[in-house]
Length: 492
Image 1 (cartoon, rainbow, N blue to C red):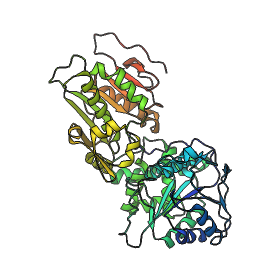
Image 2 (image 1 turned 180 degrees about the vertical axis):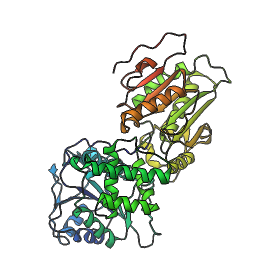
Image 3 (image 1 turned 90 degrees about the vertical axis):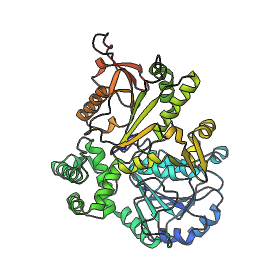
Image 4 (image 1 turned 135 degrees about the vertical axis):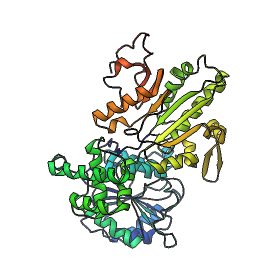
């Protein structure tokens, strides 16, 4: 799904202080001590120490008691997160955050795969921009998806730089593009975290300031600077979301005001690149919202391939494709339908995104092996070759997809499409830009073609141009050409 300047809304009770999850390596007491000693005794932040399942949480708890002035507690029952308190991981169990409360998972749940991911994902969805993840020389793929969630919800991700690592290198597991906000040696990281937690800018901008004319003018100036240097106009995105992302970069850059940040941005190409990437980071997975794909399989694909000649291709456009998971999911679904129906029909999938780096990654079709949790064993064995910690899409599937950098708000659409998929992008646009994108899709689609949006999106006042095929999963069919009965209005 495309990566507009999106910040999903937290599901839980947003606390008035940040929650810092410290992901430590085995035996990392010394680094943890350095990090915690740099925090003032009156720090307004809660800390949760995450350890690998095999590490000795009890020993770490005892060691921390003597190396920090902050109170340290083992999570022995459901406990509310408190500022200035360090909570350590319960031995042999998992944790989640729900409503600002640390909740232990039952022993049978605690043994699930990806305990670190599960905790970080819960923290991200519960606390949004108030979530901070600090990575201390941890390794492995567990946690990478959680890091993506922290970043997507507007939180911060900081990482320790190994003394032997090249400049700006992040730990191996942080493979996703742009998900780490700063990579520093432990001493610098400790001071950096302390500054962030003591910053008067910590937290989302206040609504009162966000609505002031001076604030709006500065946001408009920043968006204009990005447009001038990147060629991409982001003025059509919702101001609240853009403002939160800018606010985060302001804090990370250690400048005193929005005006100072605008000045910094005007003269710093690297900061422009960081902000642009931050604005475009999103979340995508294979077969995300599986029921939406089931609706596509049952209610659209049979009609798309009905009475097709062997030379007439089906054309699909996956707009806002990010790193390609959704495009490959659609390709797998179509391939399975053709095989089950004993059909032979050429298929071309166009997958596009505004951001160049994810498009490059999508073309490679290589993903960390944690995708095993999103795919059935049959699909994994049929469509991937896995080696080590990487699973790669087979050439037969990859060669049918054309990945391209494309700005949905500015560039001409792909035409003569039988199916257009664009999920979870419109909700981050202002109303007029939503209408423009939907109009683009009406021009892109063949008469009778299908449009799949995200579950929180609708076609607005274009009901006369589409039939609702599945209202829950926002699957629509374009009206036939002139001379055929018009579509019935869609009331949603």
